[in-house]
Length: 338
Image 1 (tube, helix red, strand yellow):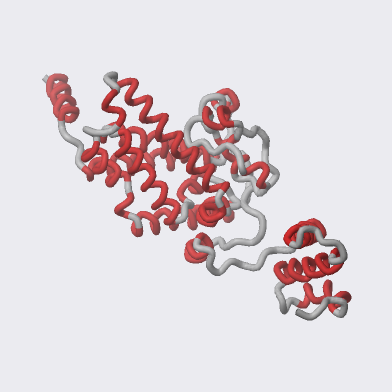
Image 2: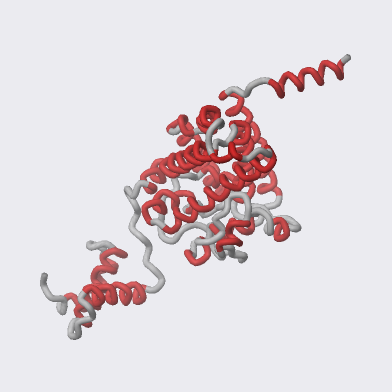
């Protein structure tokens, strides 16, 4: 009798239509369970050992960012994507596919490819990198870093997802399943953990060791491993990198609090950069650019160099910086007046 009741309850549940509220609750529950599990693993078996206060600082900022984005962009949640799918699932390219299994695979691959391409664009286009660098400026990479996203980037990402749902006509149940899988995978690959057979699993999906490279301070390293779930796209398009980064974060100083991170993503209130390790390289590049603009006309080489040096030092130390002046006073008398 009990078994019959249980089976009937399952059948009723499977036949019931999902509500917007149910999708949000289910997504939140899955994310909470995954987050708690990965956090526990990080605490017990950290890949990179660091003082507890550093990890706690990162958690506070990242969870604060998640709450801020959730409140600000409540209209761009999984529930909204679910409603869009409910409205447009009868249209779109996937309606020409008869097999539900093939339709599900194609929808998942389309979502994952979209996130790969959008992630790549965020690194290649300066206007989008301005928002995305908020995610990268966490020097203590951990599972909560997955939440460290600027609200403008979240808005654009969800808008692109909505367009894809309309274009393909992805079913609302598929949207829920795909969003849940991808979110859990993103939490997983940000975790500060390591495990046996990680390299083997990395042949199929993005694992923590692959994503750590993506958070390197070195651009030659962090411009790689863009995948959200599958490592297929990075292998296919030649953006895969397998190494251990020396340092996590971004070069230069950047804020480590919620309010200033939001401003940082908008290009406001950016702290003065720290002194680069090789000023001569920067000055040489600036001087070359000046020479190129005048078609390498001879006779102005020294002038180009001195102008470039003055500009670079002013950018590094500030126009009123005593340190910058101490490096530049010796040639100021030789600079022409403009």
